[in-house]
Length: 169
Image (cartoon, rainbow, N blue to C red; front, side):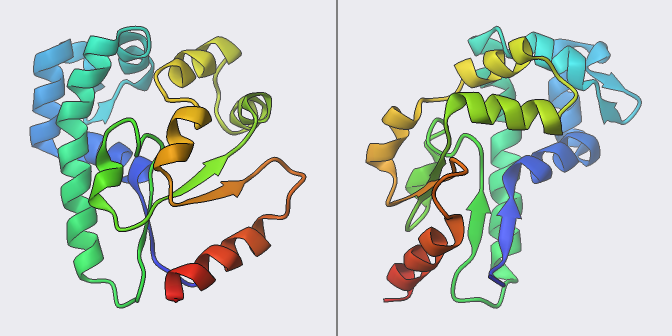
C-alpha cells in the first residue's frame, strides 16, 4: 500500500550480527559457542532459549532495546502519515503499549505450522517450541485495535483497506 514498514524480526537478526555490544552480551550470557565468527549460531541459540523461558527472557532483554532504538531512529526519517512495525511478539513483550494502534493478524495454528515448514528449514517440534513461548490469539485479541484474519478463506486486502480507512478518519 506504499506505507513504510519496519520489520522487527529482520532488524533483530541484523543487530545480532552487526551490533558488537549485543554480541558481547550474548556471548557473556551463553558462551562463545553463541557465535561462529560474527554470525550468531542460530541452532545453538534456539536450543538455549526455546525450551528455557528464563534464557529467552534474558536474550529478549538484550535484543529488544536495540530493536526499539533502531525502530525509533528509522521512524524519525520516514515521510509518511503512518509507519508500521511488524513484530512477532509485540503483545508478549509489552511493546504494544508504545504504539498508537495495533493490528493483530490471526491464522489457525495448523496453517501457521504449514507456512513455517515451507519458509524455514525447521521441524514441527521446533516450531511448536517457539509457538509455546508466544501468546494465543485469544490472549492477544482483547489488546488489539484491529484484527486481520489470514486463514486463506477471508480476503485480506479488503480487511486492510477497511483498517486504513479507519486509521485515516
